[in-house]
Image (cartoon, rainbow, N blue to C red; front, side):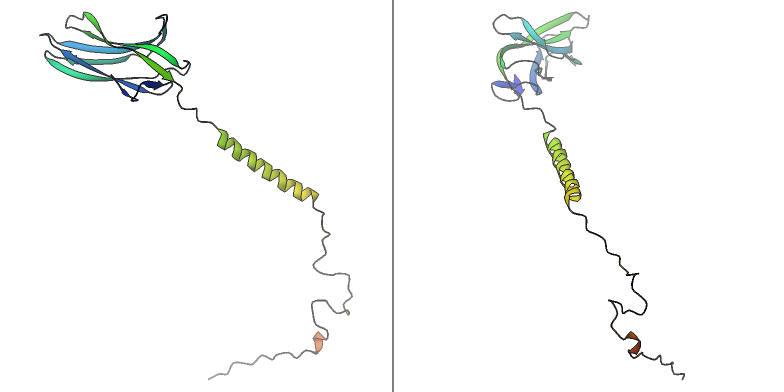
Length: 183
């Protein structure tokens, strides 16, 4: 049975899982070697895709049973629609004689998987940053350049009063420094 995803539909490009339960009812030990599967066209029966085979190499003793989980991914190249799904378990005895058992043979509907993650948010961020830089560059080019005035007026004569100092600076009383008293 297909255990994940649950439901009747399988998404394309998303891992799915088949649970295979095998029971050895005979007196001899078997070695489970692999599980593989194919996807075929429902109308023609022609094989459309092979699933990756999974190698196991686990022994299955007499009167033992064991479950095997087989993962598969329907190819992103497939179109949504109904497909036949066939899976086989391969095993061998002590003499290395190969055996195969059909473990799953059903029709399943493949649906479109989730969309691919895009670089759109990253691209949008880059475009916004470029627009901000362009706007800043335009503002500096279009804004009128203000004439810089010198911080110090070197053109005034020494006897002219400064715009920063009050008039009659020489007549302001000065504080005298007092000497520290010695004890």
